[in-house]
Image (cartoon, rainbow, N blue to C red):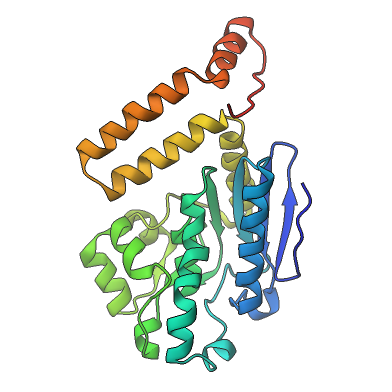
Length: 263
């Protein structure tokens, strides 16, 4: 699959169906600007329309993942911008959660403000030992508005979310792991390899089952146990009638690599 992109995000695809997105403003420490957000939305559209991508890895070129929104852009924002654009900004970051494919973030160096909100929309976050996390919005006269107060609270709990957001507290990778903000911490030189290894592993599994599993976990986070169990019943019916299940069983019995089709 070939992506129509611009320079703010570079994209490569692996033979296993992984789309590797690299934030590509290293001289600006990958500060997020309007161009990058529009590019991300375009890439998301292409992934959904094409259907051949089975997992996504989001990483960053340079020493830092992202220092958040470009301050030059923030200077032009006003109440009209907020009314017209914040819902769109939230949708771009939140769309990774809605996709049926797994989305992994690999984080090194500074991950600040909007950078944190970007990875909060991903399924799994892997951090290098040198990663540093901070939400400074309150100190700038703002409050996180691209999922920060919502998703962070669900990940780390209300007290820790208040400490990080209201106290603008910077934390290191190990503390982020302890709090549940990230799922793994690895050596800096191992970050990309480990993140790609996990992403490709998930891309190799039956895509229909992967999509149902992701939806089921999200459902459990957002709803009651009873509602989540009903969802499990519904998805089970779909999986047991799928070609992928039959192929998985046949491949296991015949001691060969399965060929999944996502149906």
